[in-house]
Length: 226
Image (cartoon, rainbow, N blue to C red; front, top):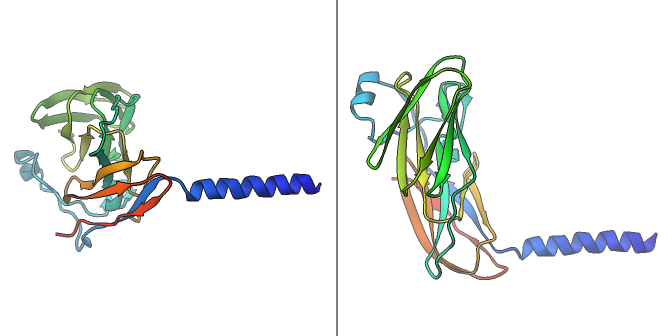
């Protein structure tokens, strides 16, 4: 019995130590306070589809945090990472909005657009180098597009002008999403020098260069206030 208890205790202690010594970068993202609700002007929206728009916290179908639209990326500076296409990822249309609103991918990734609402939707992009229009689709129809280049692909629905999203295609395999409180965690980064970037489609991007050493943790906070 004592041997079993000792084994359980030793296993727990070992796992705790291994986690504590895990190579990671973590921190928190701060953004400007949202002072008023977003207003949508249909005509203006369609005349200027590629313009920056600040999003409020409230969206159709429920509340969401603007911080969940923040993507944290780690670009290696001291070595060249192996970047592969992701397995097919989904971008949903649900409750008259895109879910997620920001989708990070690597070049060559296939993105499936899926309409989960009980009414028609459309998805189109007029971003340079990534123009497409999949037409109007009823519930359950799936259309897949391959994102071949790096950069931002801005998405809209020609039926619902308040709907917008961004596919962020990046040349690094190291990225994560902040949670609703702005907290993020990048795990298992190989040791080396990195440019760590916080990206938001409306609030821009900020970055810092740090050196990641083996079995150490680095805290790095970002402020997207302008």
